[in-house]
Image (tube, rainbow over all chains, first blue to last red; front, side, top):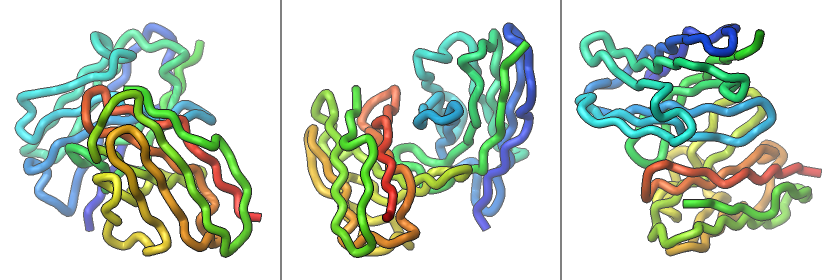
Amino acid sequence: QVQLVESGGGLVKPGGSVRLSCAASGFLFSDYYMNWFRQAPGKGLEWLSMITDNGRSVNYADSVKGRFTISRDNAMNFLYLQMNSLTVDDTAVYFCARGEYSIAVWGQGTLVTVSS
Amino acid sequence: IQMTQSPSSMSASVGDRVTITCRASQDISDWLAWYQQKPGKAPNLLIYSASSLQRGVPSRFSGSGSGTDFTLTISSLQAEDSATYYCQQTRNFPRTFGQGTKVEVK
């Protein structure tokens, strides 16, 4: 079945870095645009970034532009989010998701906690 | 594009008709999706293109609107509809969400 599984979350210090991974299965990964979203504790949903199916074009939210980098490996069916210069405001559950417009397929999320 | 939902929260009884509104700060045509999210879970797509029902979603959910004003309607509220509902515009980058509407079933 169609599945997205995030990994790489955990506790990181302010100013630190972490790379999230999203393993895709059950569909032809290279055919789809992919996204990262996040949700801070008790807060709403925030779109972070999108990458095209071939990886040639990306978009970012202003809140992460210049700090986060989205990438993909279509041969291995993985989506990544490199997160640098983290602050406490980046503490959230991070979701990978499939789609160019509305999002019908989501991962279960991985928690990133930024704290000293 | 700023998305504004109302109300922020509400309480209704089983069988009630529930309406949630979402207003965009500029014309987004029908580039709007609605999601349901339950605690600890990923969002679930209910409606896309403002009024198209996602496959597998119960028919008591419906969406309407175009331009700047949109509505999500639950025609007969069920206990399992207790959740937070979000609208999202997919017209432009950055994709933006409303702040959410928490629906409690009495």
